[in-house]
Length: 129
Image 1 (cartoon, rainbow, N blue to C red):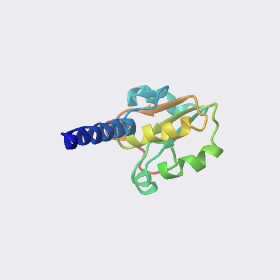
Image 2 (spheres, one colour; image 1 turned 90 degrees about the horizontal axis):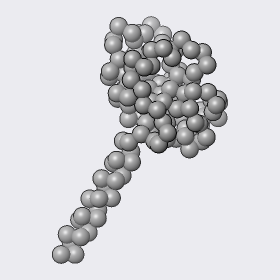
Image 3 (cartoon, rainbow, N blue to C red; image 1 turned 60 degrees about the vertical axis):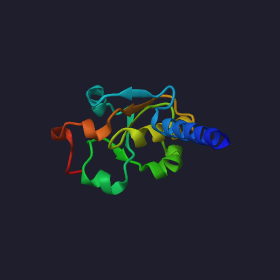
């Protein structure tokens, strides 16, 4: 009986931890790649690709600056907290994590590309930069 209760509690804690990691932060806009397109030429928006540098150099969307997730806290000091900031990664999960970290540092206009580059039309990926 006691073992069953402990197992249930541990399972619930694990599920809660997993959901906390994958769910977007409250107040962070989730946009699609189609909704992203109009923002790509807007110089007043910070576009950040949070994938590791090697993945970024394989391919990326033109206009996005590479700041790997592991460096986002440090790089937050160099970013404008008042500008709209759009984050992208391969699937959206790292972008969600980055948005949480930036939100904790006072960023208020955050958006994450839901589905990330996996939903991007390859014809729009800049492989030369």
